[in-house]
Amino acid sequence: MCASEFIASYRADADADAGTKPMPHTVLVAIVKQPINYWPLADKEVCHVGVPVAVVVADRRSAAEDAAALVEIEYEPVPAVVDRRKALDAAAPHVRLDTPDNVVACAARSVRGR
Image 1: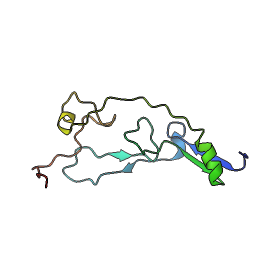
Image 2: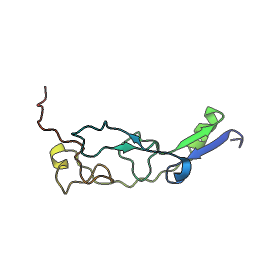
Image 3: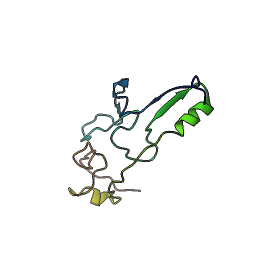
Image 4: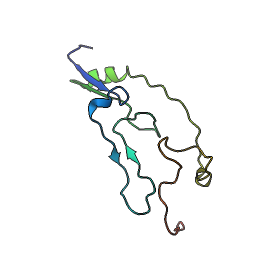
């Protein structure tokens, strides 16, 4: 890969001063207990498949693909809970590290499924 083709790469943990800010994910309404913000690049945790972890900028697609192939990420698996009722238990693993529990919103009444 020619050096002039590769322009830059970014990671949240290495480029904290890059001016990134969280992007609000929820609309602030009365039932929202804890608004969730997403960062353009994952920083301390990756909550699901598809979360961007790095960005590569290059003059040509092939150069970007070559540089992206050099990105190495180490993931540490954390416990998961897949039952929504068990997820409400205080001892259940949290979906996100920055939240006190797994409850995002509280409604005054429940609506039964169709």
